[in-house]
Amino acid sequence: MLLWRLIGRMNMIQANGDAWKKHSRIVRAALLNNLPVEMFAALSHKVFALIGKGGLKRWDDIAQRVALDAVGASVLGHDFDAITQESDFVLEYNSIMHEIANPVYLVMPVLERIFPRRRIIRRIENLVDDFDKLLERKRLDPGEDIMTFLLREPNMTHTELRNNMVLLFMAGHDTSAGGLSSLVYFLARHPDMQERARKEVLETLGPQGEPTVGRLQKLTFVNACVREALRINTPISYILPRCSETSVQLGKYLIPAGTSLNVNVYVIHHHGGYFKDPFTFAPDRFLDQGKSDASDDAWVPFGTGPRQCPARNFAIYEQRCLIAMLLREYRWTLPDDSIHKDGLHNAFSPFALTLPHDLEVVFTKL
Image (cartoon, rainbow, N blue to C red):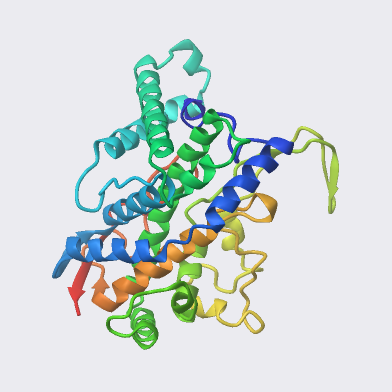
C-alpha cells in the first residue's frame, strides 16, 4: 500500500514489542507536556474573523482548516495559516491522500506491482522530503512544540522522528476535523441543547474570559456534548487490525495464532446493550456515570488499553475550547435545504474515517 511510503513502517502505530514501547513512551511524554489551550483560543478568534457577521458557511471545510493550523502549530511548530489562506503544502497532501485512496488499488493491492503508480510515488517522495525539511528546520530553530520535545530524545533516529511527525500530522487533523464537524452538526440539529451549552459557557467563562484548562473542565454539559458527538459519529470507525501471536481462548471462542483481529468502534458505540437509544444524541447520558447507561468501557473513540491514542486529551480540549468560544459568539442552524437535515452524511473514506461532507451551516452573530 502506498500509504506506507508516506508514514513508513517504524512508528508508534506499526511498531511492536520493545520498539513500540520506545515510540509510545516518547510520543506520550511529548503530548502530555503539550496542552495548548491558549493556542486553541487564538485559532478560535481566527475562525471568528473568517465567519464574520455570520451567514451560510461550509463548516466541514473550516473545521479542517482549524485542525490543520492546530496540528501545525502544536506538533510541527509551523504556521500553515490554513484558516485564512490555502497552503500549497496542504493542497498537495490532500491531493496525494485522495490518490492513495483509489478504491481500485485498495481492493486489489496486487495492481501496485503490476501497474505501479510512478507519478504518485514521486509525489509521495517529494512530500516526505518536505517533512524532512520541516524536521531539519525544527532542529535549527527549536520551539515549544511537540517535535522540539521529540528531537531531545537521543534514542530515536531521524527516520523514526519523521515517521511519527507524519503520523501525528495525519491523525491530528483528519480526526479532529471530523469531530468538530459532527459536534457543530448535532448542536445545530438540537437548538435546545445548543442554548443549554451556551448558558453554561457564559456562566463559566463570562462574556470576555479566555478559556483555561481549569475553566474548560468545569463545562460539564459542553464536555458531555463533545463525548456524545464522538460516540455517535466517531471519527475512526475501525481500529487498526492486530494479529494474535499465540492461540487464545476468548470466552467461548478459540482464536488461533495468526488471526487478524479488528475492533468495530461504530458497532460498539451503537450497541443498545451499552447505550440506551444509541442513535439518539443524548449528552446527559455522560453527566452521571452512576445513574446513566453510558459506559466508559464502551466509549472508545480513541481506542483503549495501552495502544489508546496518545493525543486523546489534546483532541478533546481542542474541541472543548473551540466549541465554547463559538457558542459565545454565534448561534447556528442548518439551512432548510441541507443534505444533512434528516441525518448526518459522511464522505467516502477507505481508511475507516467518518468525516461529514458538504456540511453547510448558517451562523448568526450574537
